[in-house]
Length: 341
Ligand code: NAD
Ligand code: 89V
Image 1 (cartoon, rainbow, N blue to C red):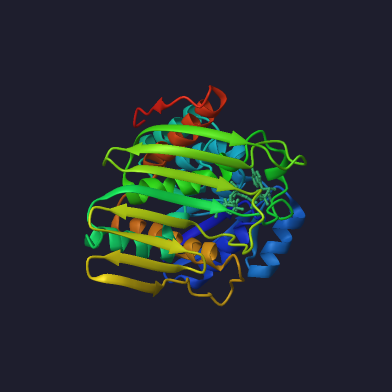
Image 2 (spheres, helix red, strand yellow):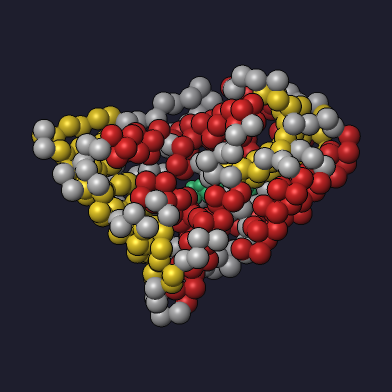
């Protein structure tokens, strides 16, 4: 049995706790939040007795295999470094860091301490995205040469996550980071990126629209486009739509989780809708299922002493794309060459 503690009992952490409770071989034995009302409410809801207002106290007092850090980005570095020096494994929410320097410091701290560090980069764990990856790996559409990963919505994300309206960065750092990670997952690491951003909603501080073009090491060119300012006939939140063209066919992941595959054998349509877990609610069920899947992967990796798919080191490459996209957008949309971190 792996024993963990959750740090940060806010909006999204409730999903983590539902998922931990559903998984076997893992138990969340303590909670930490500096907001006492949130701490108490979450402890009561999930029936967890041991609670702390301070993460250092938690780590001093508890015998843990891991901590699950579900705070916002500003506190990730101090909490990850604290957990690493305490010798516990770490799963940390995205965005992993505000700067590459912070991200590199955290991966170094984990390496020095010999602990596993995984970033909770969950979109690639959505079942529809996994289904697309399986088709690509099967070779049914041949070698992909072009792709598009698209997330366009007018869903009100600000009421659940008010910081999204006031932070200095918005859609690339919060959502684009997932969509860029999906592009990496499907098409491989990127060699270059160019980006354009826009703020359409006058009531928020930062950009709510971003369009990016990536050239991948595999030779794929991809478009990654995100918007929270697109009022469409059908609201698709929080679906990522996909288009991939390969040498012998193509695929499309259409609204409603409909996957259409065109190959020399003809057209096939599959329903790749995510299951509605007992604790989940529409339309978030797609994200909620991916939370369960990524947390299960984390425990599997701890049990097998294996490196997680979205380890801290792996996530440096997604973060480098985020940083390069902002640089491009503020510097005439120029193409930025990536170093591979
Ligand atoms: P939130 O503000 O609702 O919750 C964060 C909580 O952390 C708060 O209760 C706060 O008091 C607590 N906290 C902050 N610093 C702390 C510290 N040092 N010690 C103890 N407690 C501390 O935020 P949220 O909306 O739940 O988002 C949390 C993270 O989850 C963000 O990084 C966000 O980007 C991410 N998120 C991820 C997904 C996803 O699909 N992966 C979805 C939504 C949010
Ligand atoms: O997944 C996320 O990080 C969320 C949302 C889907 C609203 O962008 O913040």
